[in-house]
Image (cartoon, rainbow, N blue to C red; front, side, top):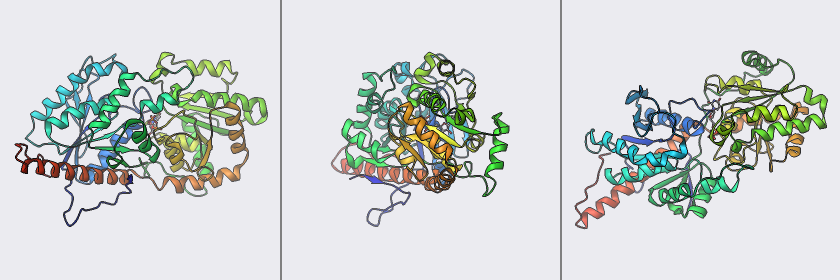
Amino acid sequence: MLEKHTGVARQRGTQPWPTPRRIATISVHTSPLDQPGTGDAGGMNVYVVEVARRLADAGVEVEIFTRATASDLPPLVEMAPGVHVRHVTAGPFEGLAKEELPGQLCAFTAGVLRAEAARPPGFYDLIHSHYWLSGQVGWLAKERWGVPLVHTAHTLAKVKNAQLAAGDRPEPKARLIGEEQVVAEADRLVANTGSEADELIKHYGADPAEVTVVEPGVDLDRFTPPPAGDRAVARLVARRRLGLPPHGYVVAFVGRIQPLKAPDVLLRAVAALRRRDPRLAAELTVAIVGGPSGSGLDRPTALIELAASLGISDTVRFLPPQTGDDLPAVYRAADVVAVPSYNESFGLVALEAQACGTPVLAAAVGGLVTAVRDGVSGVLVDGHDAEDWARALGTLLTEPRRRAELSRGAVRHASDFSWARTASGLLTVYREAVAEHRSRLVSKFSDGSTVQPAGAC
Ligand code: UDP
């Protein structure tokens, strides 16, 4: 039966579950030190960083293994108290696409194993791998170290391929097979939402007893609503800071620019709105924040060209990826944040915007159905038809009272999510995984095997 953790640790019988002292987090293809919102860095990076900090606060040390992408990177970087990033050399530092990384997994795994071999025995109590490439590394490391493997997929190829944008490249079969292997080998699978858990069970044959839903969070100290009554002033200040027009409507898209995220759907909707309601559209600015990523790198200027071909270049402003500290200004500058993705494992941008009090117009897909409460904190749109999106956007923009209501609902809804809660949920999964792994080893040992329990927790 599926469990959804809300941060309440449990005990089995009278025995408290052991808490891991130190975990190895694996993030092969993207570094927690990278700027999210461009290339391969996005929500997973934010997730790994935020959770590591909260785990360290709870007394669990975290070492994050990632591939070195420059020759001058120090082998070990302290990112925060109790959180280290270890750069593993595997393949050329630059010019290696994510799709080419399967060929470097052996080198990466060797680097991880060598790093551990230089530590005292039983240094890590558990491995948490993120994305299937890391799961492949974690699978081997867990067997060598005699510790449990917890895996989070973040995205699943079978789901992605079923919801591809027109003309987007499907994920290769090698990834599908690799994901199936990791699902079979991991001791525990963490899903962002109930629907992701269902996908793991139905499409990847995961054992329901090994799948736990732990929802991602949002930094509620960073992403805050403007003080009551000051929303208009906060909007003006934010727009000035970003160089956006002080008056009129702003609709923002924030994230990696690639077909899967469907920023083109927003542009087509704005073009449709211009045909339906030219006066309203004349008051509108679309802010696209982020950099090219994935198959979006094939033609990084595609969106600029699309805006020109739709005749809306004057309406669209492109802003480079923003740091986490600068993002609240983007969300506050906007009347609406659009998330038209074809699929999202969760959709952190939607949560961050809502925490800032900005309603979200999102596609009713994947994790967005959880991240946005339709009619309460935002509006969910079925499908990606430009006319449907234009209608939904036009309605939202012309109904200020509804937007104000949704804004209040957005703040309330986002307040249910926090990284502390996510870390607490993960810690419960870790404790269970360590306890189960240990009891399996103990029974194997008492059966006459030479295997001894590893890791004194
Ligand atoms: N992000 C950022 N700067 C940008 C654009 C995005 O820091 O310019 C961050 C954003 O705050 C969010 C993450 O990138 O936390 C994107 O996560 P999301 O789940 O929305 O999408 P993903 O990248 O995982 O597909």
